[in-house]
Length: 401
Ligand SMILES: Cc1ncc(COP(=O)(O)O)c(C=O)c1O
Image (cartoon, helix red, strand yellow):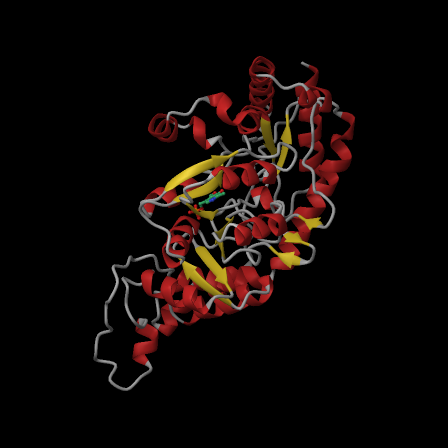
């Protein structure tokens, strides 16, 4: 009888270091935004090569505060890719601005810069005040070109780096090309703190603003106040803020994950390289592209359920018929105990955005195709040879049906 394994789409990696670190805040007495959050920020900034890092409660709040810090709000529009997790667009809505969608390049799943250029040059009344490229699944978007366009049109650039820890372009880490870069430490990411986010920036004003806004708009943090004379004076509150702080338990977890970041990333890249090799035999699948000068952090390994030939002649009907087959394939893998997911979703097809902005599926056809045809395979640090072979066998069998 066939043995059935259970292979998750991903799983976080913790060892004794995390187990020890997570209880340390109980001893320091700093439970919220204390010394471990500070150390996590320092380590993160050093790793990414940014001047500053400011921790938040998650990536959505990091995006929200970065937009506010860069002066984006009501009456403004922000260009976001149409193939991304809904949180990218939701952060724009949260500050009272409106998203303008930009289609993606199907081979990289990142914003299509030619489309972006068209949108910016068409924006005669200049409502677009920012662009938010997403470094999708660990791969940097065309960030140098996007920054050039942002500078040319005098708009802000906020990188959504939720998935791009360990993603480099020309030796520079994701998040360092824009005015700010925002990361997620949700368990599906390469390093995790449970929930958690980080803003990196070289702009001291953004640091001041995000630090205050995450802390109810306070002029100084509790930790700063405690170390100073006159600690009994409450801070000033001159702006409306939020409670988007990270706890010190999460900070401590982040510190221990940072210590093994390189090992975790290399482990993910090694699994991805094995997929690249093993999937060559399946011509009905298109594996992810990592263009020259890019290094991916492989938050996910996302293929398209389509051959290169299919991709060269994509129509709505063709996408829908391949979509049916992809779903049958994914159901087969699920029965075999192998988890898969679609990469992410086409935000313009989701109820709120479709209805509010009167959008139809075909408006951003590549994003629609990415939504309907993408399939992410299991990838995590420590995936065994046996698990990997089991996944490949299931893919082979699923593809033959
Ligand atoms: C592209 C993108 N942006 C933002 C987020 C939101 O991150 P968080 O869950 O940390 O708020 C995610 C989450 O997966 C994401 O994939």
